[in-house]
Image 1 (cartoon, helix red, strand yellow):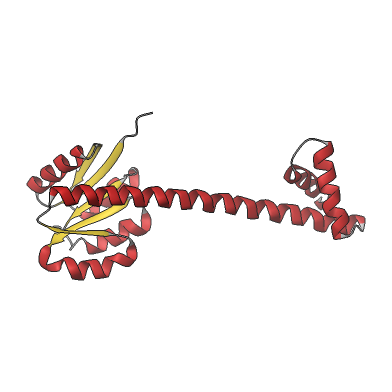
Image 2 (image 1 turned 90 degrees about the vertical axis):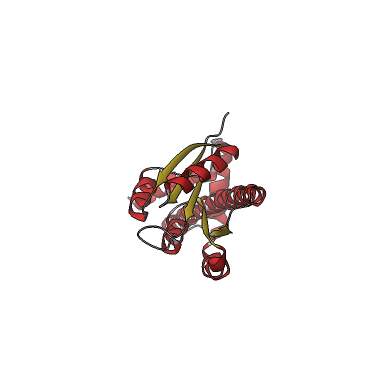
Length: 192
């Protein structure tokens, strides 16, 4: 399976956008969109999902700091902002807490490569955390349903908690289905 890497470059300078596109193509980004303004970039990101959003600051309509914060909060993209060397430390201090990577101009190709590798590693770790979080959320939801079914068995059939638990387990085993499915059936039967 071929993984297509998508990037969005926001730069007021056409020449800088072309240079950044070339750098990203060298990093296996195959689909690259460009924008000159934050408004246009937001619209593009609204309609598409990007692996990387690269902001070449300052922009024509803002500094780029606000836009990088916006993308960090509203997308799952890795967000990189490229700023003049003199501003790099202060911008980094402001954006680190938002998970935005700050790169100082002029861009060193070798460092840029390592920065992008770092963003990919970070994104992969975040995807693992997100998947694990989703699994845990489903487990909690399932436990709520099972506990609701137990409560119904306790209140409607005067079972003890232990008996209700054993009932759900035994039914699941006997019917070769999950305890969750049995719990849903109990809820359907006794809540109506």
